[in-house]
Image (cartoon, rainbow, N blue to C red; front, side):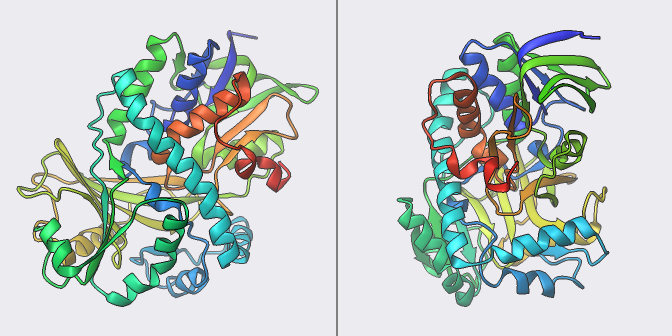
Length: 419
């Protein structure tokens, strides 16, 4: 029955699974990654590739429920909730709504901020020491506003970041346009987050996979998890379309697929897939922005690289509905055109969609399972998987193999949900 055995079996070959594999290999553990497609073929591939301690603030904040309700009939809204009946999604949304308080906003922001800041500090070292060729640039990110009321409403964001010790600089419209001449007239202000960075996410994931293999780790592709074998409260084997595998420890790093596979383990993870979209050009505009941008009113992220250019973001709660939505792709284009002289790259635009793993409290679920003695979660990173990858890998390696983690694991523990 058993094809291969490892110290640690990692379910999922996205950015979180590969980061966990890399840090575990550094402890001397033998590691095998099981991936249903190719490494990084899910949300790790088409996201905006920004490294953003500035995104510490969660979506759970007062007023978000009203925003979601107003989006029900607008398929192009930055935050869209599909009105189709879905009991699981309705339960999740109710739990999310209960957490839309300032108290939870600060609590979740502190937990997210700690993981983001640690990951940002590790990335410089990781890219340099492991020789990751992924166009990493520590250039900062600019939030751009065309309405002063939106900028004023983001005061809570500024206050949270400053309380966490992160640098954020407020600019007026003239200063923002001087910093980014590609911005159109009408900019009212901006927030500069100099501690943010960017990279090409597809190349980052490919480089992590390369280093995992070079360090002796195995990556099984075409291995979709479809069942488990148990020995009491322990997972003894994992059945996949690519064979049967076992490990002393099992790490669930399945991203948005975690709640689906969790059902096979009689686990009800408080997660929903949040669908995101992007458009990518392999040739950037003639005058690309220097910084990564967040166009706040349009909720569009702009990421320029030396070898490409991407518009992305949006959040759609439509369950596990597959496929592209041209209405939402068009909204990315319109949003960018309202802010930039050259809103698109040159040549053909490649559309993409993917599911982000959204936890009900907007904090990742990382830590040991209370139900299965050898299972550890590393999931629910929402829109921040790339940004949180290095610190999550370090945290999981510390929990499973030591030494003790640098970060306090308590805020991310699945115990908060009784898992």
